[in-house]
Length: 402
Image (cartoon, rainbow, N blue to C red; front, top):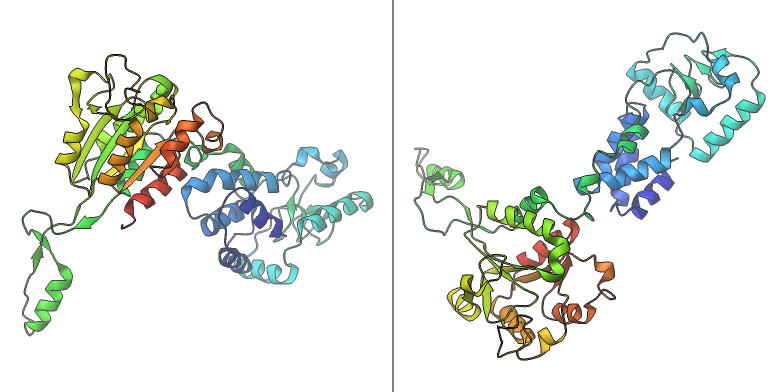
């Protein structure tokens, strides 16, 4: 019944494996879905979806596949008459449910629809407590107030939330990886950028449980406490953000990133600078890119060790001359003795742990205005789209040992 649902999930971009799918089938055979659509919705999500960022895609797939199962208003008026004066809702024990599940099994969706159409053609009177016709209180796959492991509820009251309704509400649309980032998502992503170490300076004021056990055993059972320094994040980070010009449409996301970075307190060291279009002789300490609030790029590079990780945020869209020519800097009163591309290459050599995050969707990189310079920048820095998925990939790249 659900095989096509598996393929639909894959088409929606949810990485469902055969092993997970077989686990779901085993869970269904044991009745863990609670014999309801809602139960199946939550069971399948917990087994098949490994990340909250796929919840919205799961909802869309579920809504698309199971839409129309609980739609009594679409059935014939005659069916509504058959379901009048229903039997009281029958309570099946867990043992009875499992026995029926093993006996009746799970029909495929096409067969179920065909069977319902046949019932509508042939049935001419109410049926309650049965196992075949549209009715109530029995084990028929069509009706309500009874039980069938793969049936369609028609009328009556659901024993739980309608899973199709839950999926339609799309409570998880902000979790998607293909949506641009907000402050919370960026903070969460930055927390993944961690390399814990106990070799940092500081007092040994944290109990080392494993060494304490080991030393106590060596000491004939007499307690011997061993203390160590707390494990702290050893990552040092430089963030460089393009400001102004073609980045104006992305001002909101840039301000969110700025807030998230400055709220991050778990790095050993954090540097934040601005540039406009390309990096040249100067780095700026605020978004105005004023020479009065600038530091020399070469001095910054020389004062920092090469183990700093670099995240550059910008659209990489500019005139080719800004990358390839001396004095290609767009600012009229500021020159540059070396082309911008030379500075980018120098920066990449000095700090080999580097990525470039681009707010332009990746599907436009080959044809957007400025695609020539975007291609040149990509030849220097690994570039990722500024989405949750792109950031995840970028963080993994930064954490790879050289």
